[in-house]
Image (cartoon, rainbow, N blue to C red; front, top):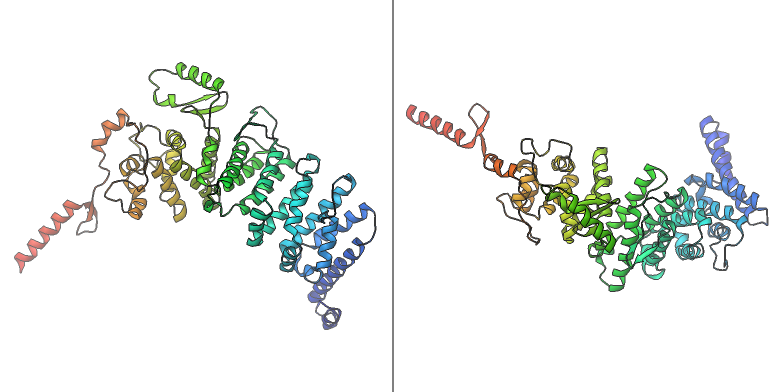
Length: 504
C-alpha cells in the first residue's frame, strides 16, 4: 500500500480501517527497514534480532507482497550461507543467523507466490542441497539441517519441476537417505541390514525433527517412483527401504514423536517400488537361528500353529525370517484403527502398504495371515464382533468411507490369497458382499493374482460348525411387508395368485 492510499484512508476517519491500514503500513515499512539494516556490517546479535522480527512479520501475506524482491531474497540467501562462494560452516557464532535466515525463507516461500518463482530463478533447491552436503555428518548443526530440509520440502511440494530436479540433477535420493542414516547413527552389518540396539537410548528431539523433515522431502522426491525400473534405482530404493526399516525399529523422545516419525516412514514406504520392499524382512543370523530352534522345541506339541511365529530376545521371527518391522507396521495399523477418526489420512497408507507387501512377498503375507487371521476357533460370534485385529478390520469393511472399506476388504482378501471361500470364512458374506460385487465374484471363485498353495488350516471347531453356518440364504418380502426366506415368500404369492384367479 502506497503512502497516498494510506493517507486517504486515514482522512476518511473510520476507526477500524485506520487501525488496520496503519498496522499494515507500519509492518511493511518495518520489513523494508529490516532489509536495509541486514545489508550493513552489524553485530551477529543485531542480525539475529532483525531476523526474528522479520520471521514474525513474514507470516502475513499482505506484508510480504511489496518486500518480496530478488534483492531481498538474495540478502537472506547470503545470511543463510546458501551462496556458492561459502565453502564451509566453521564459525559457530554464525549458526543462529543461518537458522533464523532459513526460518524466514520458509515463511516467505510458503506465503508468497513471487518468492516461489524467485526460488526457481535463484536455483534455491541446488543451494539447499549444497548446504546439506556441508553439514551432512555434523550433529552439532542439527537446526541448520532441519530448516534446510523443511525449505527443501516446501519447494518440492510447491513445484513439480523441483521434484524432478532433486531426483535426477541434484541426486536428492541418495543425499536425503544419507541424512537419515546420519540422524539414526546407522551401522551397516550387510548391504541392506543395519544393527539394531533395542536397549539403546531414544532419538533426541533434534535428531527426530531432522529425520521427519528428511522423510517428508524424500516423499516428494519419490512420489512417482513406482514407474522406475532401472537397476541402479532399485539399489537406491533398497538402501532407502533398509533405512526405513531401521526407522520403524527405533523410538523418538516421546510417544507422539515416535508416531509422527513412523507415520512419515509409512508414507515414504508407500512410494518404494514393491519389489524393493523385500528388505523389510531379513534372514536370521546363525546365532538367532539356533535361538529360534531352541524356542520352537520349548513350545508344547499341541501348539503347532503357534510354532511358526516366536518371539526371542525382542525379535519377531517367522519361518526363519526377522519380522520385526512388519510387526511394527501391524501394530501401527491397529493403533490407527483404535483412534476411530481420520481413517483416510491416517489408516489407508499403512493398509495399502501392508496389502501390496502381502501381494508381492509370500513370507510377509503368511506372517500377516498368521497374526490377523489365525486358525478360526470362535465360530459362535459374528466376524465383526470382538476386539481382535480381524474383528476391527471386518468392521471397516462396511465403513461409510468408500476408500476405507475398499482397502480394508482388499487387505483381508489378499491375506486369503484372493479365495472367496476363505474370505467368507473369516468375514461373513454380508461384510464381503461389496468387494465381491465389485470384482464379479458373488458366485464364488478367486481373484486374478496367483498365490502358492498352503495346507488347510481349518480348525476342528470350524469344521464342525461349517455345515450349519448357512453363509447365504436368499430372502424375500411377504405380502405384509416382512422379510422371510425367499422360498416361503414365493409360496405365499402363489397362494394369493391362485385365490385371485378363482375369484375371477
